[in-house]
Image (tube, rainbow, N blue to C red; front, side, top):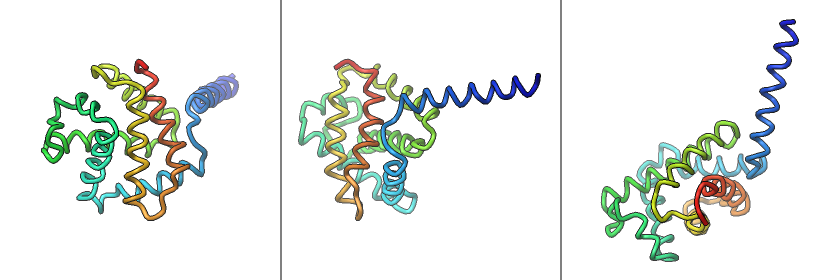
Length: 172
């Protein structure tokens, strides 16, 4: 009897993970490995000083593409992109991405993290799905400038999956 219960428990866990894997099939194993290696190259502890500049550069590009997006960040002193408040916000955003990238190999936990981020963005007035597509384009512009071997296709497949899941909680 114990073996049957144990077997059914294992089967239930596997099936639950398969459901979650199916819900989050953003990128292949190779894409995940590529994105994680790239991110480690850019975001590892030895490059702490560079982290802030990379994060701010992504937002600078976003604001060049979509100046009205600045209105979403008034509470973090967006009018001064070099202010401590804005830099701290940039780091919070990119740390969220860092967490998501590190969870690419664990779709079950990843989905819960992205759900949390999606619900956080739901409460931010004016944030829309389209903003995540704009942010994706900004990353695609900045990342090749800071990585020697940037694979835009792998990055896009993984990033777009992450962004799509977060933005699925938002209005169009």
